[in-house]
Image (cartoon, rainbow, N blue to C red; front, side):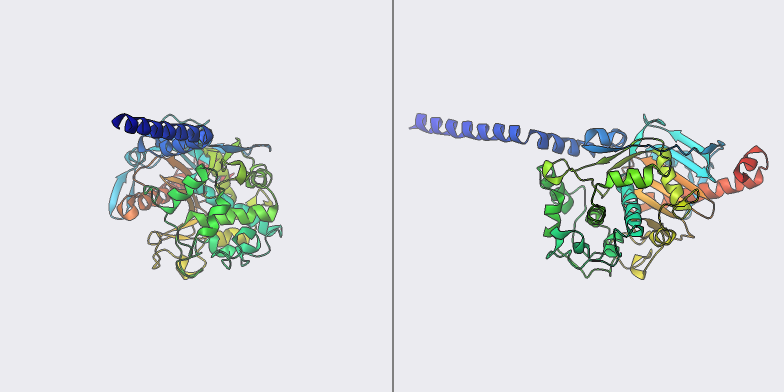
Length: 425
């Protein structure tokens, strides 16, 4: 009897092993992608990840085909310290503690500071994370100006047929652009049971994102709360795709990368499965050269105008970078993160803004733009303290950007030599 039981158990185990081996063979690429995704965001791997994202995950190249726009140079020292709230912080120490990989400061089209750490260089392409959302917003603005998107008050389901009959049906483009759709979505990247983890798992095993989105439900009325959920950006990206009848990367190459004189080829992460059509991930999958991030910031600094050519409508840039309603203002009673920053069309308006605004991504990626001082600051980090209690890292970062912008504005005024001459040209 025991021999028969042992034989039976052995047979079952053999079948189980065969099934697992077969599954591993069938889903070999999916398992490889999933393993890579898990490894990418371990704290000890972040520096490597953010300099190599486009090599780790499937991505599509965006060629730099136009004449390169060159910034002038006049290297000048950074301020030694800055004040955040009631605390004075050593700037060099702050940059080190926040695992800064690259820092670029440009004022009046002059590079005043450019530095690289943690194995990066001026040849590196840095992951945008959610800074990529601001690029999608730019493409939406261009599509709107070309009449491909009729109105930002259109129903998203009028462009994305798969959303008809779902709880996205009736949500407007403006509401997804301002993270005000009211859709329920747990975006806790540290929680394996979160919606973003489930979505990532489904995508890793071949389910196109467009098949997942209709399953989401609304937890509050659309247009009343600003609640940061990256699925809104994916819907915005899908709207642009359907409106232009093509890929986001191709549209970006034609409408942005060439016209602004990008220096380097960029890369955009795509869905891995054949069934998805390898569409770009609109929630944040770009890898871009530091100075090209600054060129994009310069475009917004000048209201969408690039040396006389209006690439993005000026009114759209203004709407994108200012608070368009009370529920989008810093400090409003939202379930999201509005206590420290307001929200435009996929751009952040920091607390106490006097016209400055920023694109930002998880773990400390920023494009900061201050029209008052004509300053663009780009920094890329692997900051594991990005979500520290009270979001102090974010508040400190904004304080640092403002201090640097003010420092260089005074530096140019106080030193009337060659640097001031270059700045005034």
